[in-house]
Amino acid sequence: METLGAREKALADLKRAAAIDPGRFRRHYEDLLRAQREGAPPIWVREGNNGVLADSR
Image (cartoon, one colour):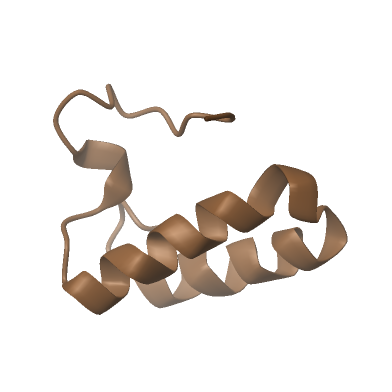
């Protein structure tokens, strides 16, 4: 959703997912929320990310 320009929808979806499975989705939600606050480009298209959201740190 974020790549398609619907960051608000992506945030809502990740927030719901984080409520269901915090261990898996909370970090992704926080990363996207931080990117929105900073006005950063979509996480999915940042250089070095290869269009994939990493599942662990």
